Image: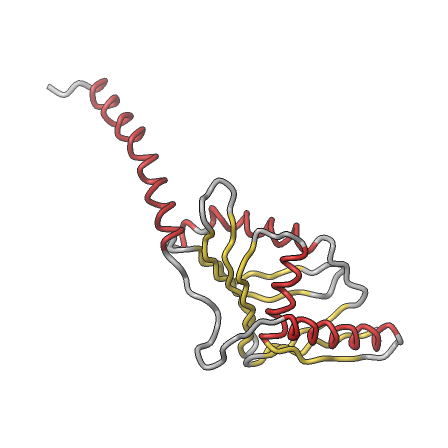
Length: 194
């Protein structure tokens, strides 16, 4: 005879055991898997202090022209932007390592390893979207986030944490001008008006 109390106890026991087992399984899938990087195999990205300096020099010339009241634009390669981004993240002690920033025809994406609290090891993340530089601070319009080996349905668990990292790291990045971005294969053109 089927006892309803026994059925409920069995289901509760299953839930008590299944929940931590599922959490551990999802954890291993997240850290063991990888969505890959955004890097195009035909266009390798290199990073160096010299490329970070080259980015900063171009940016300073762009800002100086805008400060002088002249419209201006500058082209930046994936390697220049990636080198400067890695340096900036290191200077600001961000929980992000090995970032790559990639440009395609009308699109931008980034891949990195993110240190999530209470999770041993870094998790590979791939983000695609657009950077918005038209306000007082930088903002991002994210189209898609892939996290480790997690299926798309479970990335929402980490997406808010990634959004918080972006907001924390860009809140002190004040923009004196509004910029438009034009993405093409391997580079971005940043234009601004005084």
